[in-house]
Length: 338
Image (cartoon, rainbow, N blue to C red; front, side, top):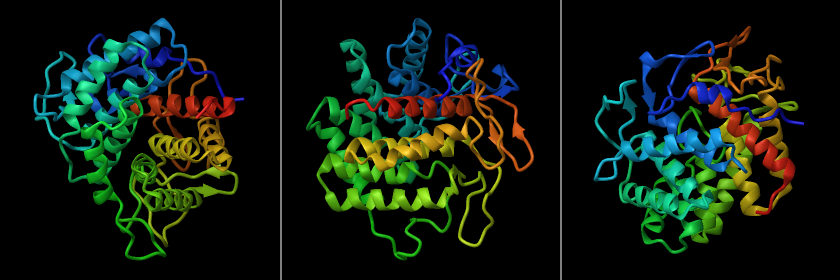
């Protein structure tokens, strides 16, 4: 039985403007400001929550307003905002652009409020006319495009994005023994095979879909030791380096859970569900050091695992990684209709 999702800490980390990025232990650090990367993740989690409480619904509204405010007329997004509400960077199409489109697409696919859906679709379609040179950004944007097509089949803007993302992400590896497109694994690795699975399914490209599934199986093997998830550490990993590696970040675990959940939804293959379960278990101590990462009382997520200790700070990214992964654990246990 997975822990109950508790949104108390997330609510304490949130102001009327947005979600503070960092915490010192369980206390928000307003001096570090807000980050669209985290607010977009927050929008995904709150949008996906079944039967949301009034608190979760309020958080979702704050996060949606933040995401839409971050976008400029050309479709690019700011990422950094001060506690007073001033944007402190220039809008661009880096990774936060992709995550924002993923979040807007997810909200459009899950909300029953037509006005909210139209606002999310408008922002998503504006951003999806752009392209990023960064593969993480294109992968997250493609996931948003897949969600848009779920509620607006045949949407030309989303289809155009997925077609270009297939070209950017879908080339065959030069070395079949190392099927990854880079020399070493980095962060949120599973978003790449997840995007290939999503794009392949949306475009009816069976070869790309199979490549995504094969790459995800390979990554699951890499990031599993015995009966537990052992994620790629923050410094990355390549063949010849020791496993397990530290420091381990919750965002890597949630990326793996997200990818396996999508693989299940696309294929109906129950073999992906135990991986989702192991990812959820990672937060309750089924990890390389046996430490508990999720605070059952407050819903806070600790910031990472070192070889001899856990990072006790409970920032936004880690808290959302815990909530999002446990959310998928609950969904997989309930086996809702695909």
